[in-house]
Image (tube, rainbow, N blue to C red; front, side, top):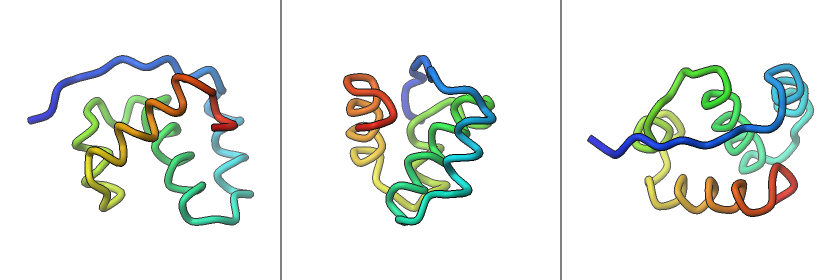
Length: 74
């Protein structure tokens, strides 16, 4: 079991949902999906995100690090 983590998602659920619906690139959609799941409380651990997306937890960690440092534009 992976460790729990806390991250503040600045965008609203509605904004994330709109961006997710209009995203064109698969990688971009995965990152937005991750943020939406976190914002809505559907996932609590990085391992859960990795399992849902079929990605390694190191990839999820890297995405979250980029988000923490640069926001959604990163």
